[in-house]
Image 1 (tube, rainbow, N blue to C red):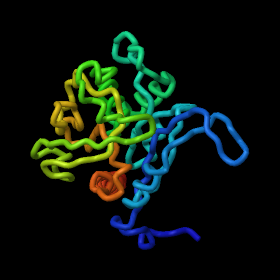
Image 2: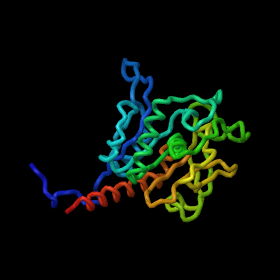
Image 3: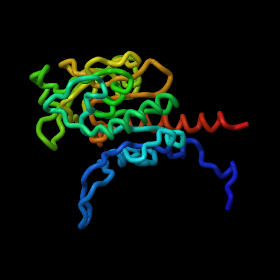
Image 4: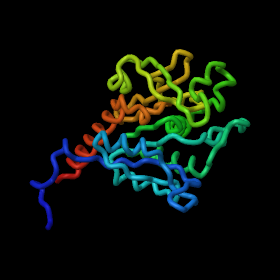
Length: 254
């Protein structure tokens, strides 16, 4: 049966369609062990719990125009960004997947061009910075002896406390300070000119960046998807994506 406008869901009930980047590497399921598109379930659960519909965007057959069908993009965490994308020599501790970098950078740039709500997490924040011309610290312990707190040991999250700049998007959702799980050995170095730093740890490590534009863009170095007790960033992002979808629909009406 064909629906009509009166049957359309109320804007507050609409589940915005959220694209999420993925890993593409060896994985296992059942009796199988092969290359697969992989993403930690915590991202999917966070999007769904906040009221969104998660859609995976693996780094195969990259087509940035697919973002025109979505209401928001999350660039998730993962391996290091290859230093060739910001003109640096490779550090011995850097481990990268250049094909995934190309995919994530292309989607990030397209999202920015479209004004699509963009939430960039950990590696995603680094991708955001690199996509706009910034650089990275390839191994934090080289410049900060206390940086082990950000990656205590393989497979175990650390915890970071940080302060937030007032009147920022981050502050609107988190207030003046917060803490979150974290897992990284790299961080933003030279911040791309369109971005401003809106949160830092006590040691100065950049924890959040966002642009001075009307579009909703937030990059965070920590892992909010792992903090089940604090869903404010995902709730805020999904709310913005829902409003983005509603405003876009209104703009298309005759």
